Image (tube, rainbow, N blue to C red):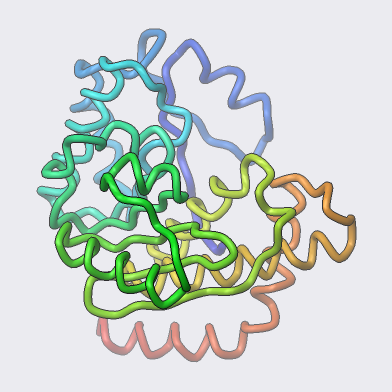
Length: 251
């Protein structure tokens, strides 16, 4: 997705395993078997050095970890740090939505996580889904990227975008993590939460379709990752032009 540098913060118990996956992964470890409230200050200090933070994937699902996760999100919300919250981060927010309300954040639930978070089922036509997602995003003051199948619905509470790229093969585990990382990568470039989420949804879905065309419907999440550069290359002239506009605005 064009991210310059990504660092994974992980407990000492699993940091070595994560490093072993790829030489491309940079890991900062914290002491212990899992995240707890004692790690919050260290995690937040590290997070403040970066343009965007992903919270959730692989963090853990017991209450002690959930409490630490909520504290991290609350602190980052207070500083206005752009965040993408997924997986275990979403589970930690169930029943505690006040922690994230008003944050500069993209929440990326699938329909099951959407129901867990907001106590409502997302169903009906894409128009009905879009309206419901928009209303909840407005109420919570965040951006939602809901993996509603067959479409993704994205809204910041004001605008709504519906993405139709992708295919059933992308129900394989790990593709949601790819989408989360891609969203964060684009968000780190200075785009709004809505634009980053919509772009990531389109790119990830298109990459999944290319992977399925090549390998059939037994693709892996890593196959989707491998196709992202090909998709983005097609839009490079447009992206370069938009980057120039953003740089001028910053100046």
